[in-house]
Image (tube, rainbow, N blue to C red; front, side):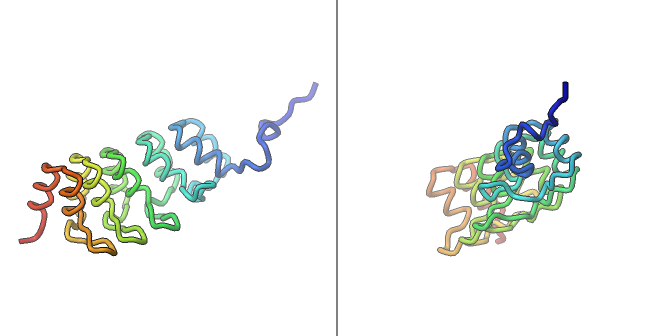
Length: 173
């Protein structure tokens, strides 16, 4: 009796990179480690344009984020629209992941093609602890989107008074 290799069970249309992205999304840090050990590139995007790190950051999978960063994942890779792992984590209020990404060298003021920063995503979505982490990490609250919005304007429009106060205190006098 012969045994088929594990790769025989994986459809050819599913790449190792897509498997890695899916495993990162699901927080399966063991499978992430196995795929990385087999040489799957941690910085190649899956079918949606997101890298494994972006997916793990968005879903708040801290152990998987740590494993990907240890394996050389670049926190500053952006999608075609300019989303990064940091913008995705910030928009979901994943404060611990945001702090880890900043420590790993994520560009705190990186913006999407429309000028939206991680601070703006966190402020708009009402994630006070994440806003604080970004401000502590050096985020600039005075930046504007392409249409002139600031994190302060977005927080006020969405009704987040504690964030409005924090941003007002952080603005240069």
